[in-house]
Image 1 (tube, chains in turn blue, green):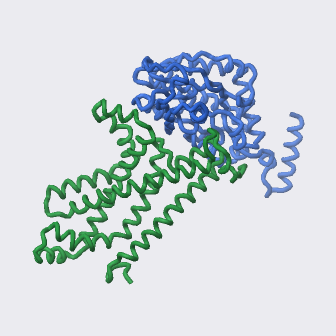
Image 2 (image 1 turned 45 degrees about the vertical axis):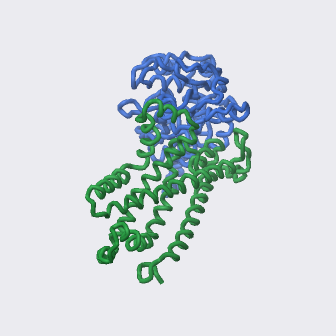
Image 3 (image 1 turned 30 degrees about the vertical axis):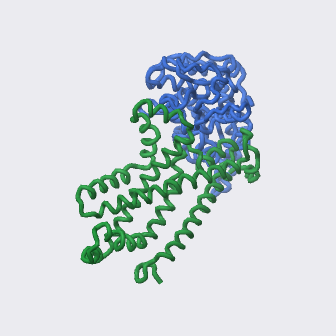
Length: 302
Length: 245
C-alpha cells in the first residue's frame, strides 16, 4: 500500500512534468484490463441455450449458473479498476465461434459451458474451473438404450464442436460400431433431432442433458443413461498471455467458491425450479465439483 | 493478438483417427460440389419449365407458375431448409416419415438440402427464363405463329433458341450463387465445405488456417465455374446482341 502511494505520488510528479504524456496509472495496466479501463466497457460472452449455465429466459435476458459467476468477476473488475460505472456488453457465442471471438477481442471473458482442455489452452487461457461434468446419453424412457454399446448401428445425435462429438466419432471408429453420428448446430437442435425420432440418443454433458430435459414438452419421457465417457472441467475463457486479468478473474472466482457463495448459486440453478418452465433439474452437487469449491484450480482433466 | 499459426495442421491425423484434416476438407469439397451440381441440374430443368409457363397465354398455367416463383423466391433459404428437413417428415404419413427419419442421416441431409437448394434456385432461374423470353420482340412469336407453327413449336424453334442464349450471363450468377448458398446446408449438419471448415476449428482450435482454406476452396470452385460459363457464353452468343463480337 505504501509503495502504491509512493508510486502514485511519483506518477503525479511525472504527469506534471510531462503534461502531454498519458497518466502513468494507465500505463501500468496492460491487455484486457487496460482495454476495459480505457473504454469503460467489458464484453461478456454468453451462450443462448446452455441450460442452466448460460441461456436466455423467456424475456430474452441472459441468465444461468455460469453467467452469475461471470457477473461476480465483473464486480471484481469494477472494484479493482475503481470505476464508478462499468458497462457490460453481452455477446452471444456458439460452440463454433467462441474461441475466435475471445481471440479477436470481441469478447473479453466467456463463461458458459466451455471445457478447459489442453488443445484449447494453446489458443486461449482458462480461469479457475467453475464446474465439472461427465459425458452421457439422453434417450426416450422406453428406447431400450442403457449404455453406449447399445448404440451400435443406430443414429446418434450430438452437438457440433463439442467434446462429445469427438468422443463419439472416435468410439465409432475404434469399436466399429457403425453408428450414424449426426452433428447438430446447437443443443436445442440436437434435442429436436432426438425428439423427432431422427436419433435414438443424444450424447452430451450430463448437466446440459438435464437442462434440455427441463425444456422438453414432457420431461418424464426422457432419461439420462450410460457410463460417463469423460469428465470435463468448465472454465471461463480469456485471451492468452494476460496474467493480470487472469489473476483477477481467478481470485474473484476463488473467493466466490471458498466463501460458499458458489454453492448457493449452484443450489439456485441445479436444485430449485428454474426458468423458462419452472422445472427442477435435481442435479446434486457432485464430489468433483465439491472438491473444486474447496480448492479452486484451473487444471484441465484431459 | 496472440495467435499460433500452424499450417501443418492439415496434414495431422484427425482426433478421431480416420483421416487427416486435409482429407476432411476434401470430403467437404466433394460434398459441396455434388450437392450444388445436382441441385443446379434440377433447378435448370424446373426453372425452365416454370419460366416458360409464366409467359404462356393460358392464365391458369401462368398463374400457377407465378405463385410457384413467389413462394420459393420470397421465403428465406434457411427457413426453406428447415421446412424441408425438420417439418416435411412430420407432414408425411407417420410410417413414411419415420422410415425416412431412420435412414442414413447423411442421405436425409443431402436429399433435404438438394431439394431445398434446387427449388429455391429454380424460382430464380424461372425469372431469368421469363425475362429472356419477354425480351424478344413480340414480332418473333407472331411470325412463328403466322408461319403455321403451333404455340409449342414456336417456343421450341423460335423463342427458346434465342432466349436461352441471351440469359447465359445472368445464369452464370445463379450458378455461382448455388455453390455459395450450399453453405447454408451446414446448419442441418451436412458435412459440406463450410461445415468441415467449422469442424476443423472445433477440433484443432486453428480458425484462421481453416477459414482461409475454406475461402480458397470456394474461390477455386467459383473461378472454374466462371471460366466455364465464359466459354459457354462465347460459344452461344447471338451475333448482333449484347456480348457478341
